[in-house]
Image (cartoon, rainbow, N blue to C red; front, top):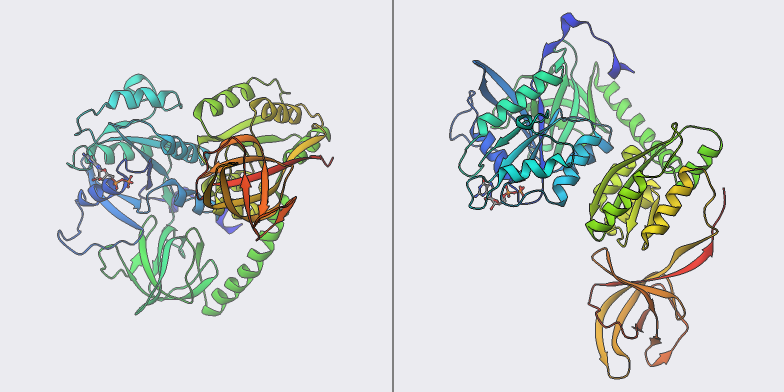
Length: 521
Ligand code: GDP
């Protein structure tokens, strides 16, 4: 593979680190990116019109030398993981933003899990230290539990207290990023060859056609080069930087906006320069075909818990990757703790890539796709997008409502034993569109059946925004118009009474299940 080619030390030159800002919503990622942009000591005209192009470069004075850093300007780990899902690893260092008044929150942990799973070193920005109630020490304390130990406390992670609002600590943060890069990463690339890189963001512009922000990873990109980015191809007609100024050539770690592509590449698509237009086009077409095939192959290759057990039985060494989502943190922790206590053969590895509270999201499925993980949903369900993606990617999502059952399944798998013979499967899902009061039956859910069949004798549970709010319910009445019926199929409306359980709301889902014999092998 040309991308893995070995290059001699003599041709490699230092390149700026590429940084992604991650963290919980509202902890100040966007504002921090703005503050960093303003801290630029480079040539950028003060007051010049800056535009959002998905990535930008800033310069800072570091140990007496002017150094550049590249920031990916789409904050959040979702974009980061979506790019990784395309095989693109653009980030060298992650800044984990934690608001000092709030402390760590679910997405803080999610972000750090995503960064760690990609082996990207983390610098922690403890933000909002201007606020009353800010407790930066507490943030340090909290993060030690997740393996991020601050340097001041003998660990190897740099924590910097900042206020994005008041522009406090921004230069220290940039220093910390550079120190982390210099200490642990060998960031060099050969600028003297045809460019390669990754599309960060792209759009269709009325006047300019396809406009793609690309990050150069090696080589130099010039106006006039023939390129192919994902399945888009063309000649670089014009390039511009984050200030809208024209760029003639772009070197490694430099983000630029490129015009001239035939279509809009996706974030995370790799691009290369080719010697001729024709070659670019041929590659693009081949890629399109390959992508289709790869998608089909991938969908077949995904591991399920059954296949894992089978591989173990066959003596093939395997590691089992898990993502655990649950409705309450206590349950997630209890499950994780019990799983870690399972005694397994030395050759078998159990890795928990991510754990969190709340519905299973697209981002969870992305992570499962990249690292071929199985997703455990404890009293939670995937949201619509996650469900679609999981189906497309063939991800094994397993639902449990009793910790013991989850533990039992995984333990049996890890020790190479066959599963129990019966399992619970979903038989129908109905969406509540209205709630009626009935003096006889309590609240009645006016539903439309979204999938499967709702049967009168099934067990039911109520799911609200992906989280199970009631379980083990019986369907005490099932009606179409005024008639009692035994079943209602997909796309039909019905009235459902759940007996004593009255806490139903418009938008909730009623899921019904039945026990079926489990297929073996
Ligand atoms: P994001 O969701 O992580 O991108 O967060 P934003 O950057 O949008 O910030 C969320 C809110 O926190 C906004 O109202 C910001 O003005 C505010 N904020 C961000 N940084 C600071 C800070 O350092 N101090 C204070 N007091 N507020 C901040």
